[in-house]
View 1 (cartoon, one colour):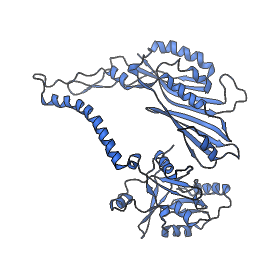
View 2: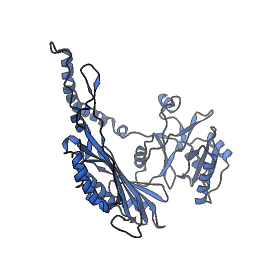
View 3: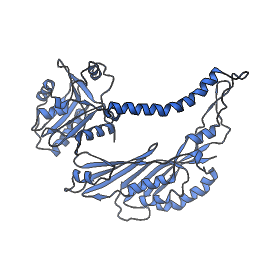
View 4: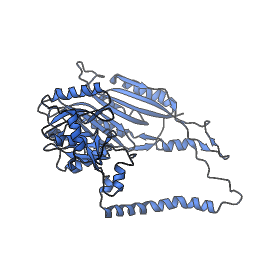
Length: 441
């Protein structure tokens, strides 16, 4: 899920209040709405949020820059908690409970599109535009979906916003998970952490202090022996275990193409340090499809976000098994050119594209020389990598883990492409895999 952009703040002259523009709005569905609102705000990396609307509940999220030393941080320093910053769109929805829309020119020259219905902000609004043409296009798109939405005069709406104040529109600072824990529990966890780290830290630093205090006679300038850069490279370069790719592909393969009127459009998984982060995009393909049905059918541990009327995104995580090159058996360049490439050539008919780039050396770490300068070990054997891209039916990828011994994957994506003539290299589920293969010189 993308992070929210920075929020535009404008002061209301003579009132001591500030209006926030350009929040991102999402519908909240569930029994514990405050917890849902905070959880989604953390995923969006927001700093503030506001919840409003009835019976439908919407949450708006923004990100305030800390550089406003005279703004929200100054208010906190005065001891009155978070300052009185109001979400302009929520305030607009409270001012016009019967609904409406406006295109308002802000004091800095930009245009702000806002709309509300039955006291709830519409998610496709609260947007700030630098171009009038773009703003008018978005307004026309809004009215094409909601032609009955009444227009509110821009100058009157702006004047009302400058004078209005409602606690229901006030932005709240998004607390971290750590801040939500009780103070006693935080102190206990801090003590546990210190007791766990302190012995290892002492064991690591004590020999250095003793060496500084009592240097060996006649050998004052000698330091620890330099590490072999080839070994350092092997110990610091990570790769995926073969079973990782199988588990990720199995997760994508279990995604239903159709579920209660929702149709799968695309999916992808990104490899991170200790896990794969995956998401799948669905669109409403039938008038009977509802957000509540998809929310109830999501697998345990998965998150779902709506956009909110016609699209939804399911997201989940898969733990990753990481290994260092030092723990694996690296093939030689000759083995890759003969055995591995031969295996890919045999699998090539099952894919629409197989691209293996030329090998490039991994940069060898430099070591400090005795005179204080950095010395590179260019005369030693190193590690090479080759970028690999494969595209074809998802079913074809189950053949890969046994053919590729050492690799670091970066992305696996899935597209839905109806095929009039399915074949060995053509299927409705088309996947694309990107990664790097490693070899030793």
